[in-house]
Amino acid sequence: MDPTLPLLLAGQPTTTGRALDVRDAWSGEVTARVALAGPAELERAIAACVAAAPALGATRAYERAALLRTCARRFAQGAEDLARTLVTEAGKPLRDARGEVTRLIDTFQIAAEEATRIGGEVLDLEVTPRARGYRGLTRRVPVGPCALISPFNFPLNLVAHKVAPAIAAGCPFVLKPASVTPLSALAIARTLVEAARELSFPTEGFSVLPLSARDAAPLVEDERLKLLSFTGSGAVGWDLKRRAGRKRVVLELGGNAACIVDRDWDLDDAVARIAFGAFYQAGQSCVKAQRILVHADVAEAFRARFVAAARALVAGDPREERTSIGPLIQESEALRLERWIADAVARGARVLCGGSRRGAVLDATVVENVPEDAPLSCEEAFGPVAVLATFTDFDAALAQVNRSRYGLQAGVFTNTLSHALRAWDVLEVGAVLVGEVPTWRVDSMPYGGVKESGFGREGLRWAIESMTEPRLLVLRTPERQA
Image (cartoon, rainbow, N blue to C red; front, side, top):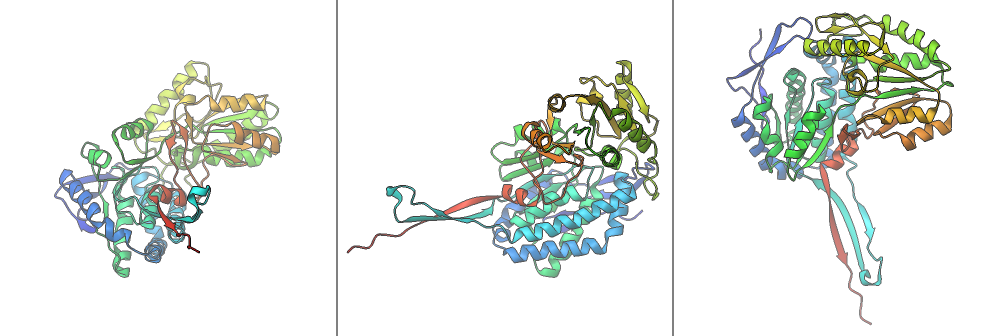
């Protein structure tokens, strides 16, 4: 095995004498060791962030954009290696891993473009006679040091959605990646340092620290950090917000996203998209299609085609090109879903396909007649399970979607314009996607949820807005005396 991989501390590759084992998600074998940070390293990282904030904030937009573009170019050059890393540490099927690398590159490229668009506006302050002769100008300035915490399910792109806007905004940061998937974050860190060295860009304010949860409290509670951006579970996220004090907080949390299939939509298209949305990367996405509501007039035909599509998906070794569903991140997650399926069946549900488990691998599973208050329906499944239900009244289907404490995204398959607009008006979610599954996301769009699904928005422009604040300049022009 190679030596322990260094973490990034204040822009420098650093070892600590302590190591975190990283296991192959498919085989369970230790595949790498990375340096593990502790309280001393975290304190050094935060102090370096504070010290580096003025210099980083003073960098020019074109300099920050150049750094982001150079990183994107280097990611493209090492794309296959990055994809293989995802397969190893996250168990992501190779085709999905390659797709995530593409999104990583896109995210850095979009951030480079947005770095040069962080503008302000001219304000006409002469809104009353008292303000005669006054005008205002605004510009956006960095908030300062940021604490970033990323999850395991998109170890490259969700790190990118925190690091890239921080760089674009001119903010130093400390990033804590998920402990089970630190290799991707450290690969981004290495590329960032190499690109910065090429461009003579300051890196003292950049730290990527594998860190245990018990040692990470200062990321949340230290008031020197001005923003906390967290993606992960709701239970953890809302607790972090409670502890975060006066700092800004952005939370991207969980969901049990719904799709509505109206009777006028092409069923083959709906089946193909929803099969992707429900089972993509073993359903380990907060916007996976979990609850599928189908109009009764087409329910029988949809059910038959959807079950056939699910049965056709290959579950197994993520390194094989034909594999669609790899292992869940841990066997305990597959066992949890197995229990939830059994609970639903005991309450009258019927398994139409799947349900079989081999270690951490669960076959694509479709279940119908699940009570709305069963965990399989009302909680976040975060696995390859879809729940089917029928409706006859579109407004009743909207109401059923809203009977969830989550509200991240929803998909509505309808050709009826009034239904699409009604869904946009009524659904309590961050985004309504018409003709598409809630799983879909392009990295430039505002992304986030309501209710227990989150607080704030990501997507490059919106993340940059959260990492900057407006600063106003008021100019008074004295009236000339006759």
